[in-house]
Length: 123
Image (tube, rainbow, N blue to C red; front, side, top):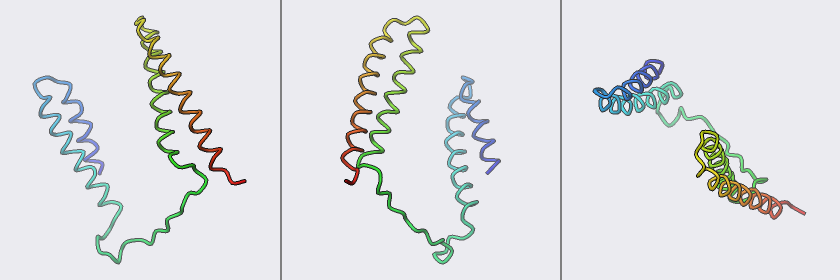
């Protein structure tokens, strides 16, 4: 697995060099697949059905429906705000529109999350 990680880094550096960028991209894909296979082999010693561990699935009941989608939306809004604040800091005045849209988007996501949590609470 360590060898696969080294290959991933090596091919990632090859992407930046123009004569070797296609070789770097293909090598990065192949080494990432190799890393995934190596990680799977290190976590499972045998692929027989008897070697699979018993896993108990716990049902999460305190999260409102759609909680993950709302958190992902808020993360997108936060990213939008950060990028547009950086654009303003570097002198691009068009970042203000993105800040306003990002702030509105973040506010909508927070309000939707609070409403969903309030509806889900038992009384």
